[in-house]
Length: 276
Image (cartoon, rainbow, N blue to C red; front, side, top):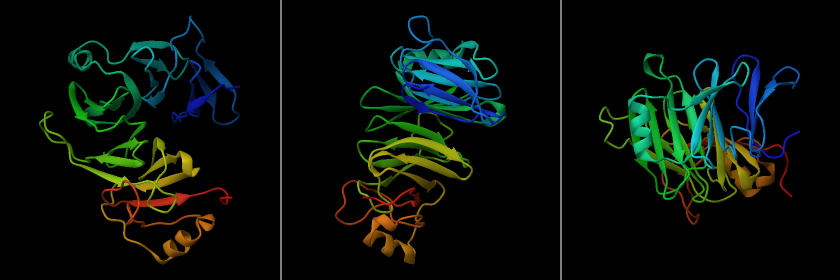
C-alpha cells in the first residue's frame, strides 16, 4: 500500500510512476496495477521526502526531493538510479549557482529533442527555473508554487496555493534568457466557476491543463491558450446552486467582491458528487 501518494504520471509505455511522500518511488502496470519495481525506503533509500515527479524524455523520470535539495533521474524500465539532474556541463553550473531547493518539477519535449524542464523553488519567496538545454532562465515569483506543468502550446503553468490562482508564463519565451516572460494570472478564492481554493498539482492533458482544486474538492480543466473566457448560459445556473455544477465552460477568472483574481481565463469544472 501507500503511505501518502502525491504524484502519479503515466510514462506512455503501459506503466505509471507513483511517488510516495514516505520516500518510496514505484512503477506500476497500467493494465493490472502490479508493482514492477520500487525504490528502497529509509536511510538506504534515494529519497527522504520526494515532492514531485515528471517524465523526462524516453525511459526516464525526474524526482525532486526538497529535503535533500536534489533531483534524481531514474530509469522507468527498472528504477535504476541514473544520477543527479542536471548532469555535468553549463546547466549544472547554472543550477548550482542558482541554489534552488527543488519543489515541483515538470518536463516536456523541447527544441532539438532536448526536454524542457521547469522546477519551482521550495524556498520563499519563490522562483521558477526554466531549463532548455544549456539555457537557464530564472523567473522570480511572489509565491512558492505548489505545482507546475508545461502545456501543449508551450505555456508554463504554476499554481499559487495560498493566493488561490494559477499563473501562465509564455507560451513564447524571450530570446534573451535575462528577460522575463509574459505572464497572466487566473482565479481567485471561491467555490464558483472561474475561482479556486488552494490549487495544488497541475497536469498537462492534451490541449488542457488539469488543476487539483484541493479545498473545492474538484478537478479544474483549464485552457492555457485562451486569454478571455467569456460566459455561457449554464454558468448562472451553476452559480446559483454550486451543488448542480457538473461542467461549466467559458467562465470568468474573477468576480466583483471575490478575493484575489487578476486576468481572465477559460476554465471548466468537473465534479464527481454534489456538495453537502
